[in-house]
Length: 337
Ligand code: PEP
Ligand code: MN
Image (cartoon, rainbow, N blue to C red; front, side, top):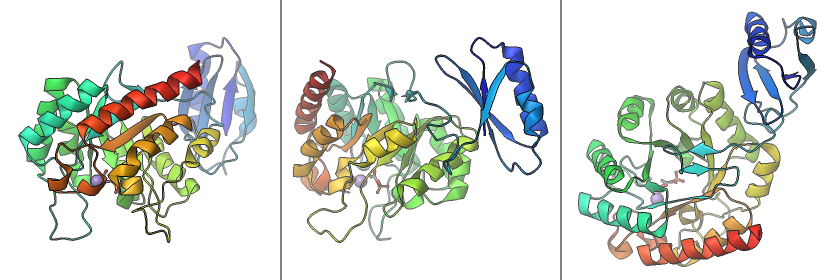
């Protein structure tokens, strides 16, 4: 349920409601909106005495949250959330559109630094690159591990870009947090609820990819796991779903953008690289995503896609990335004109 406070209530009033909510065995999430503060009370409501809260000073009303996800829901927070990848100027959401580019995998130092400088030059705010790679084939390149994380951190120092990199298991949380700015939870791990809780306890934003066969509701419930564990900074990422189609690696459902915006306050970023599997499709899907209201793009960029160790077929060159960023800006400007 949501406890809606009256406009202009004091901090003491909010603290009092939080105390009552906690005494009833419920978890509180205080959300300070532009005109109102609300306290979302989440948990088992069997032993809850609503009237005690209703009669507390400066409580306006109590409303049930109808969606199965609560703190991820728009019912709890109407205004869209802006989430900074790495401090001011690196936000996505609430009108901020952020570009994140970089290779599928960190391959070596010179490869990563060259791409990092190129995507920075093109206007990106984030650098992607996997150090731990979830590969379908156990004999494929598995990533450089900690060495890859060190290279990513060096690229951040050199460019100021926020580092977005995948975390595959709970035992990697401390290590990845030491180097990364944003923890990417991959499509194969969206249902790994123990990992979701573990990144929910970390103090870095999380880029949560949609499971390739997950429904929208399951996707938002996965986000709910992270937020309810204590981390409100969740960025959703659509990366395509499995269908019968074969001309694409995955089918990229851009209709999820308006659907998420209707259901949730969380930002939604699109990954057209995994979403199509083909470099030639990536720029068009980037433009379409921005036109549909995406809060950002996560794009695979490689200086020599033909020789990339992973996902070369869907990686665009720095030149194509730079043109794509300019074209996307034209779309946003036209929409905002
Ligand atoms: C990736 O971003 O390179 C990746 C492995 O993504 P996904 O989890 O969406 O397959
Ligand atoms: Mn990839």
